[in-house]
Length: 410
Image (spheres, one colour):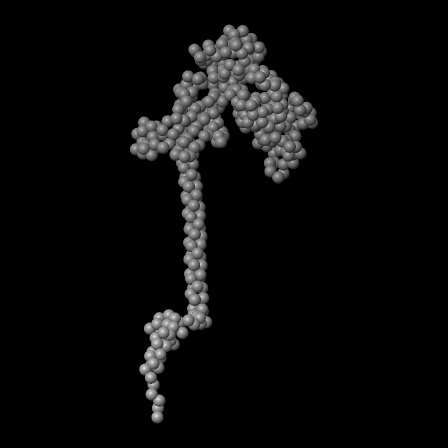
C-alpha cells in the first residue's frame, strides 16, 4: 500500500524547479540548441574564412596589376605620340627651310638681274650712287609680289626679305699678294705685300703678318686646280728650288695627271686654299678680334683684281697708293662723293691734285668698275631663317652674272 505523499512534498518540488538557474543564452531555446551555440568554429568554417580572405587579396592584386598595365600603356602610347609629333615637326622644319632656300634663290636671281641691268645702263662704271647700292630693309614678300600683280601674293604674308649688295673690289684682295707670271708658277708680289703692310699699320695690326699671309696664300694656291694646267715651258731646276721668301714657286706641285697618279711630297702638309677672310685664322698671329677688324677692308677673290676707286674706303686707298696719308685719302673720298670717277684718267688727276706722283703706284691696280659683288640676303619664312652671302661675278663685256660661291651664316 503506497504511502501517501504530503502537500509539503509537492510544494518543495515546485519550488526547486522554479528556483533553478536559467539557461545561458535564450531561455526559450532548448538546452540542446543552446549548448551547441557555445561550441568553437569547426575546420570548415576556418577554411571558408581563409578562402574569402585570399579571394579579397587576389582581387586587390589584380586591381593593382591592371592599374600598372594601364599606366605602362599610357606611357608607351604617349612616347609614341611624342616621337610622332617630333617627326612631324622635323618634316615641317625641313619643308619650311626648303621653301626659305628657294625664296632666297629667287631673291638672288632678282639681284643678279639688277646687277646686269646696272651694267647695261652704266657700262664700265660702278659707283655708290647706283641702284645696286640701295639696301633692302626687312620687307614682307607679299609686298613685292603685289607690286608685280601676282595673284598668289597673299601666300607670302609670313615671309620677309632683307639684304644688300657689297662691292667686293672696294676691299683689298688678298689674292693680289701672289701673282702667276706663268702657268703653274706662283710668285710673291712685293708691292702688294707692302700695300697690305700699310693697311695693317693703319688698322693697328702687326705689319709682319702681311708677309706671313703671302707665304700661306702661295702654299695654299699650290694645291689648287690651276696646277693641273699644261705648262707652256719646261720647269727648270732654278724655278723649282726658288726660295720661300721670294721668286717663283709651285712648279714642284705641278702635274698633268690628277688623281692617284699625283705624287706630291708636300701635299700632306699643304694648307687649305683661302676662300674668305676667316681663313686668316689659320695663320699664326691672327686672332678673332684681328680678323673682325680687317673684315670691312679685306676680301679673298678667286683671281687678282684692281681696286675700285669709286667705292673703296679711305683706309684701302691710303694703303694701295704709296705716300698717301689717311687724311688725304679721306679728302679724296669726300671729293668722290660729289662727282664719281668715270675712268682711270680721272682717278690719276684726282691723285695728282692730292700730291701723289704717278710713278709711285701701279695704274693697272686702280679701276672705276667692278666685276665681283658680295650679295648679303636674309629670308625669314615663318620659323625658318636663311642668312646667306654669295659671291657673284659680272662679266665686263656681256654683263652676264655668274655665281662663284655661297656661304650660309650660322
